[in-house]
Image (cartoon, rainbow, N blue to C red; front, top):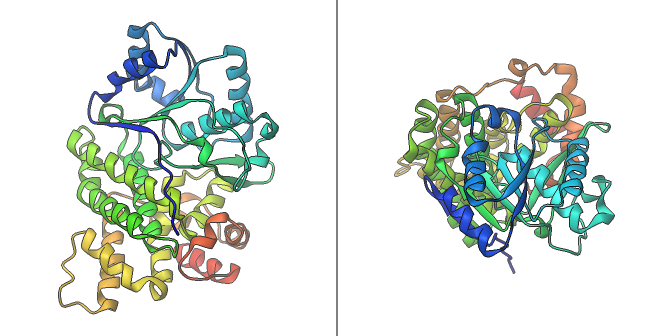
Length: 383
C-alpha cells in the first residue's frame, strides 16, 4: 500500500501571483499576516505580493524577523504577532525558512497544545488542519509549499526538529518566476541542488513507489536541464520556471516517500553552525551517492539518463558512476563548495555531527543501512 498527500491548489508561471486577489475574495479573507524575510523586503520581492493585497483592499502586517535556519524563538515571536493581529490568512513569501515558520505558527494556532514547538517534532498527533496558509515560493529548493514537512531549529539543544504533519500543507501554492529573478547566483545554485537532493533521495529510498518515481525522475530532468542556466542568467524566466517545476514535483514525491542521509547529515550542519540547508545538501550529495551506490546502483542508471547521460552500452556499475559524475560536474559548474573545511567546519566537529545525523528522522529512509562510524567516514571524505 502507498499513500499520496498533496496540496489543494497550485499556480505556475510569470504573473500568476495576480490570481491571489480572486482566491482571497472567494474565501472572504480581508486581513493577512505576511511572513517574509528582510532581504526579500529590501529587494522588493515581498512587495510583488503585497502590491496585489494593496490593490485588493486587503490589510496586512509583515513579520520578517527570521534566521536562515528558523528557531523556536522565531516561531513564538511570529505566533505572538499572529495572535495580536488576528488575521484571516497567513501569506508566506519566501523559501524554506519563511514557509517552515509559517507552518509551525499555523499548526499551533489550531492546535494550541503544541505551543512549546518542541512537541511538534516527528509525526505530531495534531487533530486539526492548520490555520490557512497561502505560500509564495521565492526559491526553487525546499518545495515547502507542497510538502507535509517543516524544520525548526532548537538552538538550546543545537539540533533541528524535523516535523512531519499532513495538517500543515498550504491551501494554495504559487510558483511565480517573477519572484525568483532577483535571487543571487549562490542562492540559486544552493537551493537548486537542494531540490536535486530531494529528487535523488526520494528516487532511491526504499519507500519509493511507481508514482513517486514518475515525479522524481522528471524532477531530476527539469533540474539538470535548467539549473545552470538559472544560475548564469537569473532573469532567464524559462529556466526559472523549469526549476520551479523541478523543485515542486520533487516536493510532491519526498513529502510522501521520505529522504535519506544527505538530509540527516545536512541538518546538524544547520543546527550547530547555521550553514544554509541548500549549501549543506549540495556539498554532501555526491559523497553520499558514492556511499549509497552498492544499495542503489540500479536506480542510478535512471538518474544518469535524467541528467542527460547516454547510458547505452554501459554496465550497471558504469552507469552508476556516470550518475555520480554528472552530479559532481553540475555542482562544480555552478560554484558549490566541495569540502566542509571551505565552509568553516573543523575536523574535531565531525564526530558530534555524525552522532546527530545518525538519530535524525531521515536516516531511516536511506537505501543503505548505516552507523555513526560510517556517517563519520562520509564526513571525513567530505572534509
